[in-house]
Image (cartoon, rainbow, N blue to C red; front, side, top):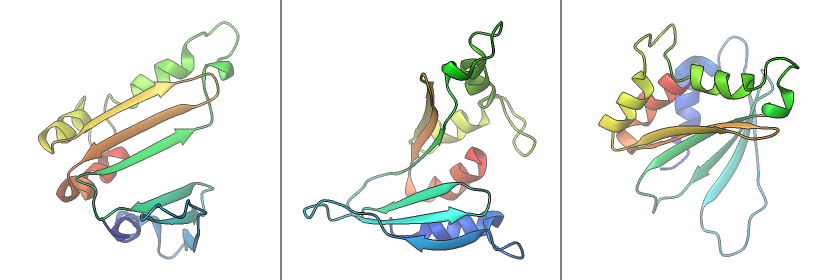
Length: 139
């Protein structure tokens, strides 16, 4: 576990000439929680919460977009949910349909998403060895 995720974010090109990685913050937590937390604010406005749990058996990531079905335009009900599904169809870097799911399955992991009234959340879990590749596909 550890805070290797911050290094992985940098390896994926989120820091560099543009200085995207702006700094680490701290998170309040209950006294009995032994995990380590930190936040990273990216220049594109995204806030990343990093959690280090040495006892965890797998790595995980989630992305919440503050757009849900309440944001569907009139005349296009279901658009937010449709867009949720479109994200699993591939990307420019990984054009194979369902490549994220195939990678997760081969890495003892899974991926899923849900659309709620005001949010759409995408998430996955995988082995520590597969985290870098999973983040590449997830991004």
